[in-house]
Image 1: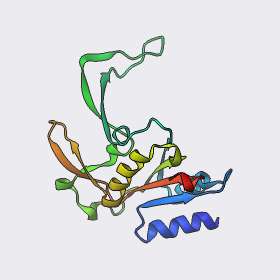
Image 2 (image 1 turned 90 degrees about the horizontal axis):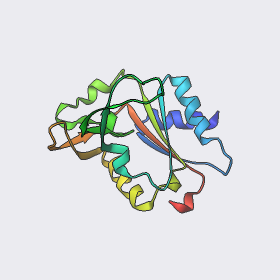
Image 3 (image 1 turned 45 degrees about the vertical axis):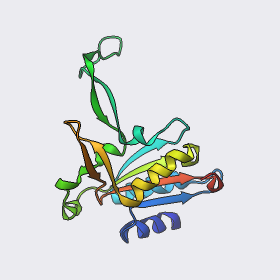
Length: 167
């Protein structure tokens, strides 16, 4: 419970990103889950692995699929062209020109947890750190133009590691 109280204090004093260094077999992830449960925050998890890139976390391109699955559990692509998709962090970003920080007050808190963050390549962690430190990035909008996006105040990133020396 002390870990949950410490996390709650960090977030309530303006901490938007948290690094949880847990011992091997520790319960850092459970502490974040419990914090989310107690505060009614939304919890989203990404498992760290060597093939994750910042692009996966922010944006990408994919086919657009039909809403319904067929009898075999498949969905068919709607067309032959790719559409812009947002990744686990990218779907929470807001255009800087449309962002009003006071609008974040009263909104549900969201925790995006990167578990086993040490498994992600160091070069990608450097790029991710740039986003986390500035809370802003350039991405394509719906029309394909590069636009500055920001991470709202109600979105928190929690990275969990048990091998700090690999970061």
